[in-house]
Length: 56
Image 1 (cartoon, rainbow, N blue to C red):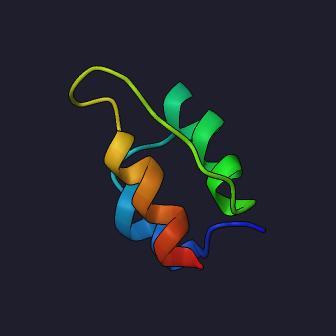
Image 2 (cartoon, rainbow, N blue to C red; image 1 turned 135 degrees about the horizontal axis):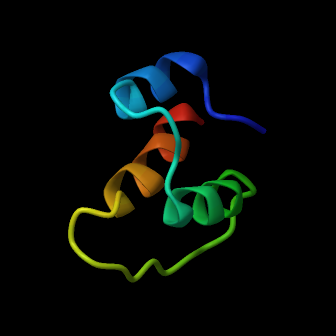
């Protein structure tokens, strides 16, 4: 499963690429698995969690 284009545009429209946290966590969430994400402030954790959930 992939994130809908409109959701990608809304969450990541100003950025050219996903960061490492997002690349690793989004597929896990899209597969319906639970995940704990720990990273510094401003690294895209919120977007990594919300974008796939809203896309579903």
